[in-house]
Length: 187
Image (cartoon, rainbow, N blue to C red; front, side):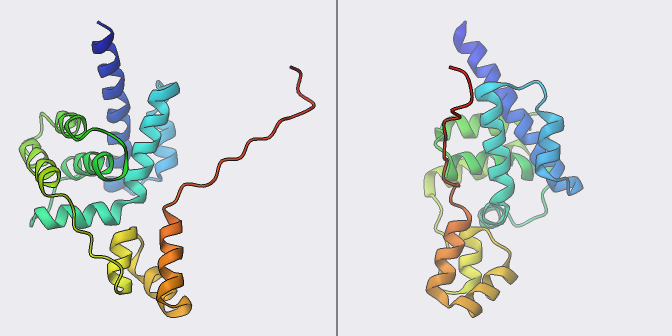
């Protein structure tokens, strides 16, 4: 019975992330405000997972859309695009097993007519992987690092290719965590 409980908890965290990503795509909502509104019932690991998933999918939107465009040549409804963002974020940028990312992402849109497309795209990425365009020019680096093209070009021209690549890579690196002991707090 504990397995069913942990599965439903993971599903609710993914549902929250899905709703956040959907709101950012459809309404242009700010991810932090959407998350605050959607994640009120989540605590602990579930809240942390949902936040990492939602914010990561929003941060990597450019790269994720590029991957989607490699597999789909038509306009997608917001729920389908959001489910693909959620699935691809887990598969490409998080340590989530592919089968879990695929199954849960399809489940998010099970009632939508495009759920089979979500399954097909994610399974194709699982089989073939992703060949990123590299960093030979500002446009390719913008896709690889999920940055707006105008920023990539500006940095490329201003800093030169090597420093621009390093700065773009640093943009997606998590910040260092630092802890300090408060000597005034009681033990």
